[in-house]
Length: 317
Image 1 (tube, rainbow, N blue to C red):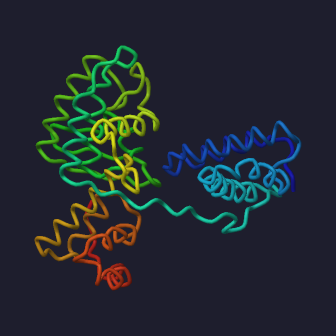
Image 2 (image 1 turned 60 degrees about the vertical axis):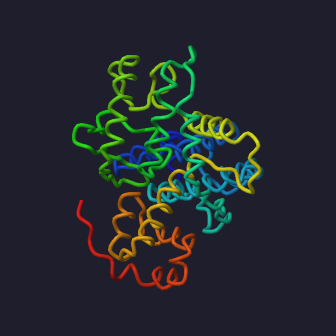
């Protein structure tokens, strides 16, 4: 049945409200779906989500594999939603496109970390973006010390930062799950000074790391471009096989903690669930991914991956 009195953009609006009601931020997938809906309306607005229009639109993304994969996932969900509303929508089959293979993580040496933060601390004031010299070293320190995702750092709200109590709350990151992160006193002291300086420029700001002119939060490009700028300042002649990225600060956090456990001969089965919870992983196997990069753990990596789900203790909130 085709409920023609309602347009596809109206259904999309209701779908996004439904996702938000479940606790999902759903920002990137919403962007993908809005692009498709715009394409759909400009071509054959009287139709809904038919196979021909879906195939045509996906064909325009063949040179952007990352966007293509994300769009396919979003459109599959939206198609299922439309079916539940009685719309004869086309649902993309599983494995329509292959999941992208992520680049391997880059793990920093102590010397590289030192040089990188020396570069971040040397950022000069810029009249076009007040406070940039405070934001750059602070946001990268938070990512390095806590292993949080770039998005989690960018979208961190002031109301979820409790420096006087030594913790911050990560809200609605991947899925509707929240988590509380306790941070070191050294980082607390650093962020208190940062907060005092940035508050003087942007009083009453909503986000802990404000964007241009204090509006909203810093962008993906801000993170990526400034990470690369600091790295190139530290290593202008870098010739490694893989170029490090901001997300590698998160990878390094996991790897460094596991290395520390190995050197201290701690029980992995006891420590693993805490690292999983702290990093916001949905399953223990996501955390176990890092174990095969640590020589001391590699022989038992397969056994851990197969058995840990059955033996992990429950971790309190």
